[in-house]
Amino acid sequence: MPDYGYLAGAVGVAVAITFALRAIPFAVRARLRESALLDSIGRWMPLGAVAILAMYALSSIDVGASHHGIPQIAGVLVTAGVHLWRRNVALSILSGTAVCVVLLNWVV
Image 1 (cartoon, rainbow, N blue to C red):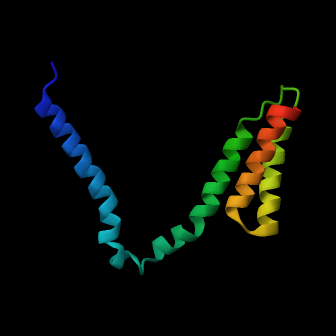
Image 2 (cartoon, one colour):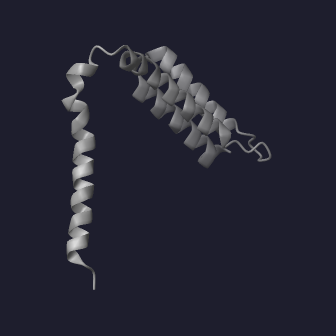
């Protein structure tokens, strides 16, 4: 039989930690607003995230397969092209993903 006091305590600790981790950024927001470090992180983080996602997508290429990674490379190229054309992150990611999925599942 489980110890309900122990389970309630564990859930309470998890709730308190989750609440604190979500509330702390709002509590220190005024002090961090003038931070040069956060300004720099805010400028470079989107580029870093996209670069990591592109490397992840390209790392799954199997050069021994019949398609030699053409769907993944086409998806990355379409994503970059649509983003340069429209400057819309959601549209570029959606279109690149659609091209990759269509090529992987129905063409190749």
